Image (cartoon, rainbow over all chains, first blue to last red; front, side, top):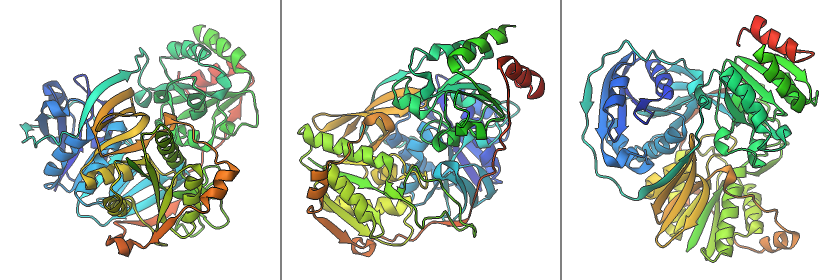
Length: 311
Length: 249
């Protein structure tokens, strides 16, 4: 049997989350097919065909897929899914939006946010903000799965040469339409794929003070993140949020500044390889997960850190 | 327009979760429960729509044990008009929840259903999307702004790269994200009034829904604990450790 991965792409580029999802799909011990749905997607399809371990690429090129709306994408996936043992997507805002709709239309459960594949029907997934790990077995013949990308290595982006095949595009349910988008513009790397992240919390005191973090970020080539407290306080937009209800990250280095370490924040970053905490409260729970802790006033420590990195 | 809101009773977000020694689940005895935080946002949004004259009636639905009545009462105290409790002690997974909600929607015929984007116990993030699928309705998930128009609704969504606005044909499903609103605290008079508001109780079988779980939980374990590391004295020492010990910069 084969399994189908829904590719994530943007502006003609295959996104890294697709590569992690391909690795999870391979662990199911089946041929991996990748579906690229969108409008004007030839380059993305070529990129998907080159991914190591991909046996076939399916393309659905139509205007209704341009903005990855859940309704037309789900209608397409439901048609295609019938020939597969599993349908997988990265647990990104698109995957989380579309896949449960597919599962319900197929009358199967969805297994959300898997972090390990035990066997073709058994998976590990975090619950309670990662404070517990559940091993679940699916009784459905067809599995619908979203994948926590940080839990799987990226498949090699080159080395494959899969055939590309266009599929029949079903009618657009036409119950929703795209109006506009406001994407955060940043020269810095994306949070979910950055090698280094520096995040600020309530201790930053204001949005303006985030420039202290940005200065350090630019010296390290790092992405900037934030805790839910900082987002709730209106310092920064929600797409910077790291945590249970924001983005799940696992960079090589995570620097938490002025973040106390609420359970829900730890849920989003505790799989980082090295964690640094800078906080003036030495009792802050963040120090319990930090490899290196510095008890200091961040308004003094951040300029010092920027200066030290220049040396 | 009638608005339906779904609410779930979950372990309070402040409670430290403990995994049971026999690895069958997490400890729920003597633990504080409250309304799932995203569902509070859903109730609040419905109440605001009613206050703005866009909604005429708010029906709040919960699926769970008899104690889920308390969660419904909380929603009624916030401003919902009446409650529906689909009472069961069985584990009800998202697909079954969506099927039960569909049965309630078929009876109630709301123009809009608002749900939390995910429950903070199983973190599934599925029910709203599944309900939309079963009803054949449009969906606006992870909403940070909702604007009701004439026969359609504009939903601004929190997406990975920022915000996206979509227009949905009504009836529609909306799931809430954090920044949609800040839920109110119920006032004492409203809590008293809520005690008199009606709650209709039924069983899953009354709705003709098969709620058998599709996923079997084989075990629940504690994640590997991170060891606390060391404290460094100053920035110079920190940068030295990162360069020469951890070798990450």
